[in-house]
Image (cartoon, rainbow, N blue to C red; front, top):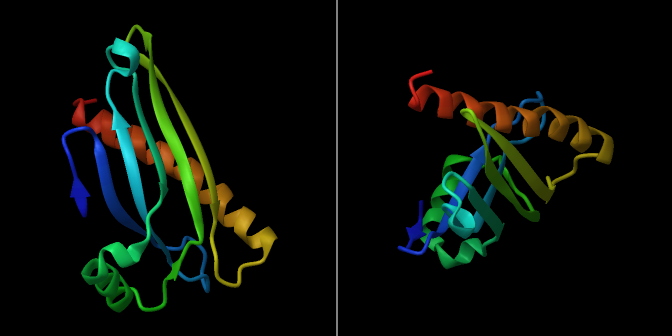
Length: 135
């Protein structure tokens, strides 16, 4: 995390290792807003995010470029995730994203990569949550 405040606003970057051989890793800098217990509903949580100019954090940006010298910065990335309690220990997770991988990927390859990574993101989210809950 690069920056955060007490209202749930955060600035951060992420690096994604490409799941496809011969396709460069990707990274992005984002600003997000976390809202816990949306509208007073216990367990209803939401994060929304949008692109952040990496030049606001020149040291972090330079570090990412050095460490992941072949990675490509994504030119478009915004969206949200939301956790809605359903009762009986169940939740619904809603994940929305608009992104473009950048670089020289064809649209068909970009769709293939996205089709693999986005579902994995949700499953990883579930896996980590279950582990933290002791399940």
